[in-house]
Amino acid sequence: MSLGYAEKLSYIEDVGQVGMTEHFDPPHVLQEKIERLAMLVQKSKHLVVFTGAGISTSCGIPDFRGPKGIWTLQREGKALPEASLPFHRAMPSMTHMALVELERAGILKFVISQNVDGLHLRSGIPREKLAELHGNSFLETCPSCGVEYLRDFEVETIGLKETSRRCSDKKCGARLKDTVLDWEDALPSKEMNLAEKHCRIADVVLCLGTSLQITPACNLPLKSLRGGGKIVIVNLQKTPKDKKANLLIHGLVDKVISGVMDFLNLQIPPFVRIDFFQIILTQALSSDKKNVNWNLRVASVHGQKAPLPFIKSIEISFLENQGYKSAVLQKEPFQLKRRTLQAKSFEMVMKFNFIDSCGCPSTEIIVPLNFKVSRDCFELDKDAILQKLRHTAIQESCCGQNAVVERNAVLTPKTDVIVYAIVTNVIRYKKTTEALEADSLSNGVKRRRESANGTETSRKRSEVHRRKPRF
Image (tube, rainbow, N blue to C red; front, side):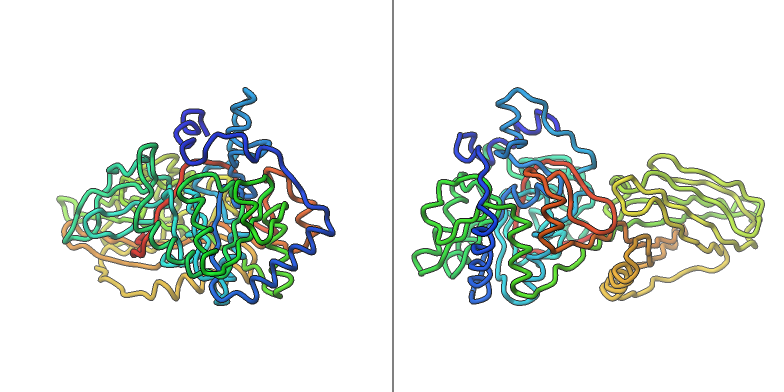
């Protein structure tokens, strides 16, 4: 994270002195409060969760007001925390995934977030049950037809500006915009209206990891009081709304939520990250009609000019000693040009080397090439394929599994497009108090996991409304 970037974000939370010091409830008091919170959650009819930066510190994303927070370090004249891993590889925390399970169980009705890290959406919270008040660093939206596009890379602009991509709907084609607010931008009315609606009917509003200082967002939980709702605040620093809370818990968010899940006898589901890429094979006959000139390109599903941030390099070889020269594609665009005999069919081995933040170093895919057979479009059940990939990854506790999820053919020029889904991270969360105490720092530098690699980094904010995400 750069200083300029942090300065851009400082509008999100006021730079006042409230909440600088961290407070921890004594263990016996904390346990009693966790049980009280679990009872409130269990009995709730309309639970709303309101989250801030503190929910993502265990993902390696710094908060603002903690001892190692961005503004704390700025005031002390210290260097800002270095991100050891890219922002786009940040993984959901234990709390993110616990909220997913609460939603699946029918307990959690709505999530309101001030974060732009996109981790609620990535974790599996349904889009229609999520309001990202400050936008999402990985989300683009079409101002014309309203379709949203969730990316695997950080969108290059903030401030609701036009990006370099267009809506993929052939009837639309409008220039897309980012969703992250800048200094002068008002909170999106659709998001605020939806958030306010749910707070008004909530019987419990659970505030997690937020200083509750940014207006008007910080006043949303108070909307529940008029209807007899209760407010619970879980935060290490004091907040201006503490006196309004029915229950105030000073403890690590992951530890508190883990205790609640234990009390409710609910399992925190593992997180499986699936990324996508496409292999584009274009071919043309040589002038003598004996050879095929072909071009292979590995590209992002978000557009051929979009980055492929999780792939470091690609090694290409050929089976059965075909005599074709191997190649290593070191950087984007990942592209290979070859000439082969038209009558020859062969298999190509593609070894994908991933960046360090992926849970496995590489995986291999065998691609059959037969230039005599034209391929038609295949209708595949993408949801079923992805579900099977997740299930297999969880069962095997490893990543690298892959499958074809889409296949298309273009006649002129003759082109085959194959879209692959690949598991790049599998994270299991330890739900024991001992694991949390052994693995946690006050500003969350470590992650709670049993397998796969972790994540550290930081950056923007996020937006909402019910729209259809597209890959």
